[in-house]
Length: 481
Image 1 (cartoon, one colour):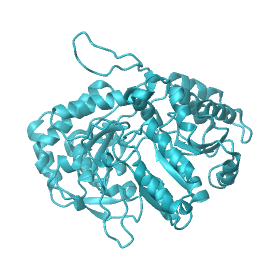
Image 2 (cartoon, helix red, strand yellow):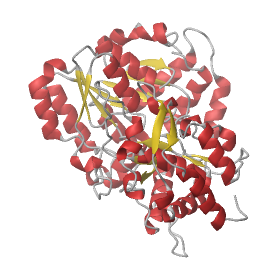
Image 3 (spheres, helix red, strand yellow):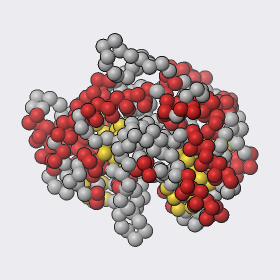
Image 4 (cartoon, helix red, strand yellow):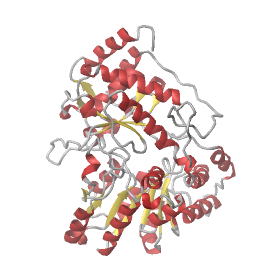
């Protein structure tokens, strides 16, 4: 993909699509935004869409489909068994990954559940570069342990390391050498969701897989964010710059025994699945699909979504398509940096990530700064982001708080959804909040689930800081929303 330069010298991302269907948005007054976040227990997951202007919670299931995907949905074969839609999707995965077998599931965490139930036992150790919330929950529920082996740069918020999601290969080798009999598989997340969408290099993926196979350990990849990782490999890794996206993908998949993904991210459709090279591994997991998902040729997915997914996977091999997310994320990150707002660097995939511990350093970690910042950003601009910090962790067995390595507010940029002016609006309101950051206080739980508490836990502010924030906003924007 050639770089697009503007004669004016301005450096902005260029949309490589046109908008043909629109959905009306509402921007409610700041007073209503404050009421709405209070009603939601200061948990952005519990907000109602009618109160949200820009929904930056996630890119999962909310990316814009292409015209080719929508057209493909009209030719779906809705047979319960033996559907030709399943065959088309399986053939596309074989073309892209080189895998022979495919097990469909209704989404990525369902695939995680099947893999965990098949391979994880009490006392199992699952090494990974970094965990994801549902992945860890599936493993610990079955009595397993997660061992995070990301390089030290991975949890440094400010860095110039291009591949902060890389494995620490020395630590991986040591763990496998000492515990390979307790390790059924190694999980690779490309790229890392909870630490800013940071990618792994092709070289690191291949070397980590070689180490695992040397000790007889299976390699499992979570490819949900693979499209962003492919973009970063192609643009940041010198040895890969002359490889096509398909060649990079085949190099990666050739080192994996199992590849699973959320189609809500990879492929821009609602569903997911598990691609497998080996018939033996396929048969090990097969029986769990009809038991928990649906028959083997739909696995809980709509066949229309499966048709759209097949097209979306094909489009993932197009640099003009996969560049849109990283380019807009980088633009938003760079603009916030110009205004002094602390963000994760370098800009990764999935979204722009604010560093809550530098944004509001006066809020102690036990009062959930990332969650507080999420609530404050919503009050300031009607922007719904996702807390990626201590609230997203789970307590230790003794009930003590497990403090996260980083406290981030993720502002996802769903692909082909927001315009540049909307991104500029988000930058403006976040910049205003940063100038008024001393007003923001902490949160405490009033309803705390035992696991996945970030989904439906409810909190309250430790002081009247939300009201003070509204008053400051109204002073500066007396006649504006």
